[in-house]
Length: 216
Image 1 (cartoon, rainbow, N blue to C red):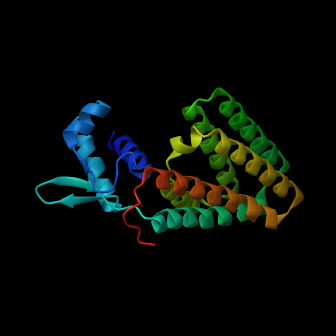
Image 2 (cartoon, rainbow, N blue to C red):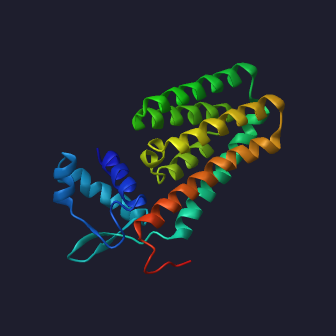
């Protein structure tokens, strides 16, 4: 339960729905999410360890600053790990596995047609889960999963334009695997994270959280 609360709070912080400097009240959060205070407290301890919230003595937990550099660094890290996994996949992938990736990309396209953000997010996750299993890089995949938990999935999953880019990038990646084109494997893998960083940056700019000060 605390993991689910932490995931919800990360999404709120990374989209500036809960803004830097705002206090996260445990009682209010527990009531809103329909849980007890305990998982909220545990989630906030986790987020404090991640540097997403700070503890203000005698006042509670306050959302930490989120800079442009933070966003750039998060997506850079994800991209670097993903490229490493993709190149390993390029060395190992079989015709049957390519067909499997095509099927999962079709599932993502179908989910986009429903407009259901949860279905879209699940289909996108499954595509990359299957993809990363081919690389047989368990530890790298775990690090990538840890990094992507800061990605506000619903922000993307409810954006049809993002969905079009994702499906197209997946399709081009699959063609690159079939053709043995490692340069395109790298380009299409990086494309997804470059696009993700740009979309989140634009969203955060629109919220005004960087209007007063920006450490970049």
